[in-house]
Every structure is written in C-alpha cells, then in structure tokens.
Image (cartoon, rainbow, N blue to C red):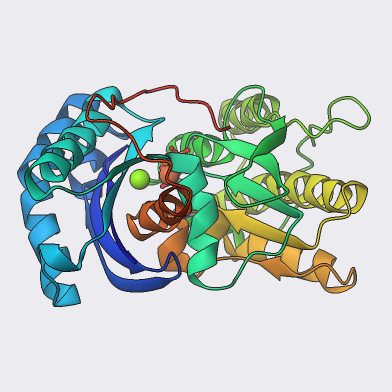
Length: 332
Ligand code: ATP
Ligand code: MG
Ligand code: FE
C-alpha cells in the first residue's frame, strides 16, 4: 500500500510517498523559513501564498524521486489541522482535488498524530506507548494503547516548548527559528543561572513555560540596566537546562506510572541535543526503550502524515470530499 502524504499546516510545503506506513519512498520538503526570517516568525498570509506557489512543484518532485505514477498510489493523506487555517486549506484543497480527479480515497490526518508516527518510519511501535510531543505549537504527553488511539495525559498550560525557545531566542537577538541556535549556544555555555522549574501540582503531567520565559526576560533586562555582562551562552544553557529537566522528569514519571513498553519523542524540539542526551541518560537505566526520530523527521514533513494516514486507511477510516481544514482540531 502506497500513501501519498501532503502537509501544509505551517511554513513547510511537503509531499511524500510512504509504503505500508513504514517505508519512505520519497519525502520532499520546501521550507519557507527564509521568507519569514525577516519578520521574526511565520506570517500567515505569506505562508499561504508560498504553499500555493510550491505545492504543485513539490508534488511533482515527490513522484519523480519515487519514480512512481498515480496508478501506484492507493490513497491521499493530508493534514486537516491544527495549524494556520489559510495554510491548511492549500493542502486540504489540493488533496481533495487530487482525490476527486484521480479517484483515490482521501484521509484526514491530525498534525500531531503525524509527528508521533514519524517514529514508526524508523522503528515499530509497541503498546502501551508514551509519546512526548514537543513542537512549535504543542507540548504534550500522550498515552497510546493501540494504533490511532490517543489519550492526552498532560499538556502545556501556556507556551509550547518550541514557542518558548523561539521567544527566548528573540530576546537573545538570534535568528528565527531560534531553537537550533539556543541549542548550539547552550553547548558552549554554563548552567550558571538558576532559572525556575515549573513542576506544577504534585502528580500533574501538565507543563508551563511562560514563567521561565519571563524569568529569562527579567534576567536579561536587569542585567542590561545594571551593566552586568551576561553571556548569551550561559542564558541559553541555563534556560535549556530548565526545559530539559522538566520534560525529562515528567516523561520518566509518566512512563513508570503507566508502565509503558516504549517511549517515543516527536516534534521539532525533539531535535534538541540537550533533550536527546538527557532522555537517553535517564531512560538507559529503566529498561524502557526510548525512540527519538532522526533530525530530519523531527520537524514538519509529509512522510509522517502518510505514515499516520496508513493506519486510518487500514481501518477504512477515510474522509469525504467535504473534508475541511480545522485550525484547532483536537487529537482523539
Ligand atoms: P506544531 O507541530 O505544534 O503545529 P510546528 O509544526 O511549527 O508546530 P515543528 O515544525 O514540529 O513545529 O517544530 C518547530 C519548532 O522546533 C520551532 O519552535 C523550533 O525552534 C524548534 N526546534 C527545532 N530544532 C530545535 C532544537 N535543536 N532545539 C530546540 N528547538 C528546536
Ligand atoms: Mg515549521
Ligand atoms: Fe509540526
């Protein structure tokens, strides 16, 4: 079974072909980062326009790389939400038009289910499974007892992890997206600043990063006023230490409480070297297998959408041609 995946929820236009939900045949991603950089973040109108310009080219390239034709495709999976509505609409309308014209089943995919299923392109799932999702818009702990079944056991109450990275990066005058820059600086700095850890109530698997963000902003601001020299590297290292410690500890505690067979990590912040190292260390002693996708599959791509779509396809869970983009679609 070959699934064509389409992803346009934010600022990458992506099309991929995945075989049997596990094997990448082609995976093309056109990033718009260069166009958004000068605004310090994603500008929705610009994103939509770029998707319109890119989608046909990216689609063609995905077929070329795969050396496949439409007759080789069994279904079309597309991100239906969450994300920027104008951006999502480009993918959804493209997928609907193609499904109609080429007589292929259509499958709507939740973007975060996609991030989770990026892991299945590299190793098979074993249930029950705990997924830590850390991306630009989400920070969640999701328990899965079977394919396609999601129970959110914790989520952020304010900023997402990636959002906190990007905002702190902006304070440090680093380019957008700031996550990778902070990651690099952190490896050169010392954890000399004692930033808060937001543990929340005992037993809670929720997250909060806005207090930490404010603490970083205050530190930089007060330092400037007093004429203190605060090294960016040390701010980055100390900020990252706080984020990573909370993410690692809560993931470990949830994995033990729910006695999961596997822990997987997903989303753009899963590319973070500090987080990867910390999780590796913590889980190595527990006997619970930990899987983190290779860097390329952490950030937005369409192979992950096709991989998640494969499960719906197996179950006959297809969409009608009235499928609509939903900017705030829930994972369920
Ligand atoms: P969502 O998936 O929640 O809709 P999104 O698709 O915009 O949001 P992703 O593409 O999954 O998010 O991830 C992008 C985020 O990952 C950005 O916030 C970026 O700064 C962050 N990121 C990427 N690499 C790293 C890194 N090495 N360290 C920390 N953060 C990183
Ligand atoms: Mg992106
Ligand atoms: Fe994403």
